[in-house]
Image (cartoon, rainbow, N blue to C red):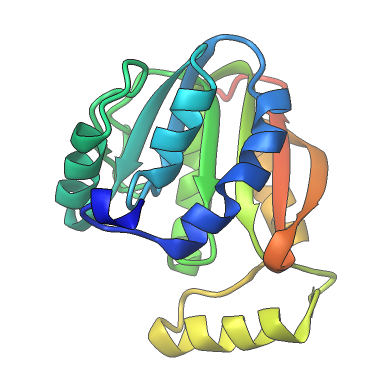
Length: 205
């Protein structure tokens, strides 16, 4: 499968079925999904094929967009839109309000000061009742869930001091500030979580 993608992530290939098993019960109604930080586009291709009632909008920063566009074009699926260029710190985002937002391995990669921008943008570009799903590792009460996640955090900070495994409580606080209530926390393989939030009110401009 990797040979058919211009860029390829083994991690994305390994976790896609586990994530799909949950998303199929969360993104139930027809609607549009904005995927932030689509990377190689492997999740977009796999999920859109399995969930034909959804329209999937892949999005990533400019430096990743060419490879993402090439991968989506090579795996043309009728319910995937053309990828869009999205920097969470530049508002407004180039997308109409959506029903679902999905991001895998994003909030620990971006700089810490961009995480509030992420949630602010999600709050501004979703409809009431929208659902947000975040996949990745988290700390709880300031503690890592496993030694391997602590080592991963060190590795992340070695690449970029502003990145790192985020506190679950901080993520829930930012979500709530932007109209999303915490719904569920699913344990996932490889010491990851899938956090689910739902928008319960509109954000005033």
